[in-house]
Amino acid sequence: MPDIHVPSELFPFRLDQLEHFQFEQYELRRVFGKITNEQREQCIRLWTNNGVIASVEAARSRSSEVCYMLYKQEGQQLIGVNTLYQGQVTQDGPKVWLNRMFIDPNHRQSRLMIVGTAMMLCFAKTHLANQGLPGVVNINENRKLSRPGMQRIFHRLGYRRLGWQNEQEVIMFKFSNINLIAQ
Image 1: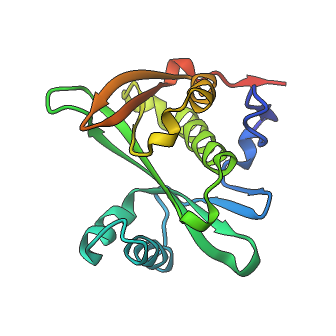
Image 2: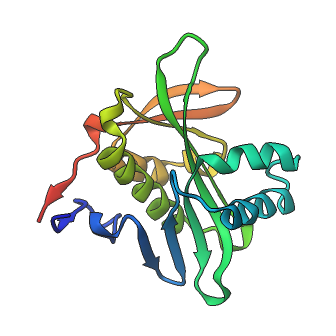
């Protein structure tokens, strides 16, 4: 892959690092379409131990949607997951890629969330945009991410707000708005 950089200081990685990236004390690993049984079990434990997904069966089903796993480098502890799956925002709306991210509350920091989101968006743009879906939609469940500062960051990532659904902000990252440039 050519040495292509994402055009923003928000993204400290090159596209050739989309498989595996070390960021501060963390490590992000892409497992989309190739997650192992051991990695699935790690995701299930993370979700169920934190009350994110109540049943092991639902967590097992969701584990097939994991795009990136986020680890604390010391001890290789799984501290977060980023999922990516096809679906619809509304029953009659077009199919899109849907994204959710969970990071253990003890490791939440905006830069880790931004880097994880940016890596997922760049992966989706470079590997999935040719499947006919217009982009990635994030249904934002965290009110803190609706603050003006985070809104500016999301805007720089290329998002467009679609509105609100069940008191959750619906954000669309259109593939056409995600610009990757060679440097």
